[in-house]
Image (cartoon, rainbow, N blue to C red; front, side, top):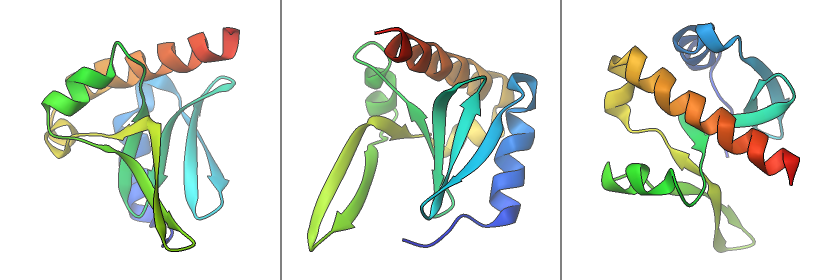
Length: 112
């Protein structure tokens, strides 16, 4: 895995500024937190949001898939995070709506 570039991280943080996200380095990526919950992930200059059974469908309908990585020669799928459709990066209001949904999912998981 390659790391997230500073420019990409700053770009995403600017888009999400109304949520006051905090970025924390994690392995070779960056976790995005709202208060105490992780709702997003930046890896290899790609942006992923937390999903559940309710929100996953809209990501799949947009052609997005889960976060994957290679481990010991096999592909691991982390289905709790789906890649943000690229078109949303040009639609800040809609992106914020999806990000708010991801925060709600992360908060619900934390309460369990």
